[in-house]
Length: 226
Image (cartoon, rainbow, N blue to C red; front, side, top):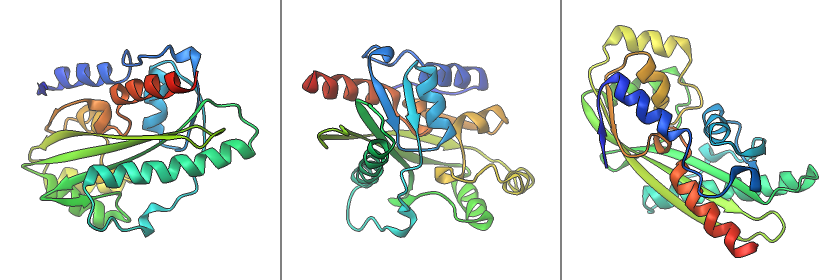
């Protein structure tokens, strides 16, 4: 894997993450994204996929991972969302081939870090990331809405965050741009804002929807049904 460093190089890596990874023709598959995440929608749009989307109606903040690996946890949550999304797609009269569920978490010192509930928690998360490396794990689940058949997968990437400073953290928390984001940040937004961030792995994994993994999973999933 490549370690991406400067801002221009980071932007180039993010651009590569948002297109060119699909291994099935985007116009040959109809998708339902069980998420309202703008970042996941952008990734699918950049790759050229046709899809509908909606919130899956799953409140994962009430769930606890227990003794499972981070990869198993995010893949399980992704499946819960995909399964719920399949029910919504059916009620809506859709004819999608595949429902996609996704979930993302950060991992620091073996501890799962999800989406902050308030500004104080967001501030604590960002402070905790400073001058350290953490891991971002994203899970994907594919469900066939007609048969209920499923496929799960997960991918990880590493992120190093330098010194941000109290003033910038306070400004960021006050902006509420952390809302709905695993680990309280979005990679492309924070790199664009000049935060000192490096990453190793697929940028789209950090952004919440691993596009290379998704492409290979779709190829296998559709190959089994067509």
